[in-house]
Image (cartoon, rainbow, N blue to C red):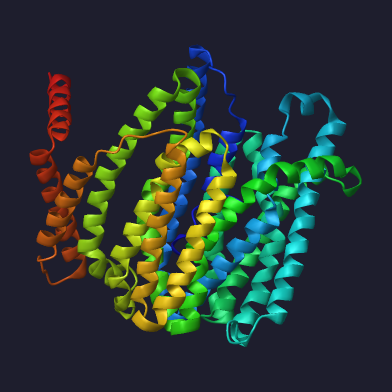
Length: 528
């Protein structure tokens, strides 16, 4: 269910992993222009395959969202989200960066002729992932056994015990998916991504008549599907003799851990920054409050994913290519212009969300989640701000300084936890959304400051101010529209917000007028 999970590719691998993997493998010397053209064509084609699977998964999540918010109670929906965040954190730890190592150490030309080497590679990566997953699962169970009951009560402990099966599955499944990516079987990866999502939703719905509408049902259906997918991907490797415990190579496993471990800290810090507030909301305000917050965050994350998914797939390879071929100046110019365009689009999206959040919650989640609508503008603002890391942290990624990235994100995660602890008892649920916004802004400022020393970008504050002014005016004007039906109100406010925002930008910004004139001229020329 996309709206209560982080954006992932098949096998539970976050999109950020893909970006970091690219940074770690792109050569620093300039690439011949012909080779660049060929690789860009391949990149566009394969990115299109992945994007198809991602968009399909997002669509399935969008369809299932109003179904599940109505099937499950408010408190159960919040618990589903909380357990998903806990699993995400421990899954990242259980992978130990091996999914990145599986990409880094894959050698297609060698493995095509060296069967022994291929057998060592596949056996080490898959069995190694199984070992790390088993170790982390034991750690997870130990934490559940000794955790204070005031933080994790018996009902939550029972669900986490059931869900711990997924910790044993997801690390090996992630490595199995990376094997497909390394082999460039992008169409099958895309199909697997969408099919796994559909099967999970179907499995949950099929179990509801037998197990009832409960959190246990949700995770039972998820376990059945994910175990089946792991088995399906493992069987061909075992049948062809490519996986065997006897072929496990300790030296390769150690090298894989050395390569992958530094990246895991960034991933863990990002997950804590994104999800630690769920446990605190439940602790201070109860399960119902967590349900409202989970719906608000899920809807906000869905909106943000429409931007961050294509951005994460596309921007890193592009600026690395420019860096390698044209140097720092052109890379800085590209990122500066790209950031400016992103801010323009993000401001418009925020205005639409702020004007329509109340109607959207009622329409998609049902009126019982009405209290979630006030949280959405703060959460969307924070997530849209955090998405700028693709531009503002480019210097750190180019120079492979993932340690600094992890450290700064960790500082932000600590701030988020502290703010929640201080504000939740005093301000209620609104405090969690405000803490998310402030911690994301703090994170972006730290990343931008550190990255600027390596790759300075130009940010036109006057132009950004125009975007904010246009968004505020459009939001204010559209929020006064009141129609009878939520769907009609949602459509009318969205259209009016976009129209006013685009019109104001046309009046205030000469570049927008220039782009509009260019588009009209091109269309007129095409018609002629």
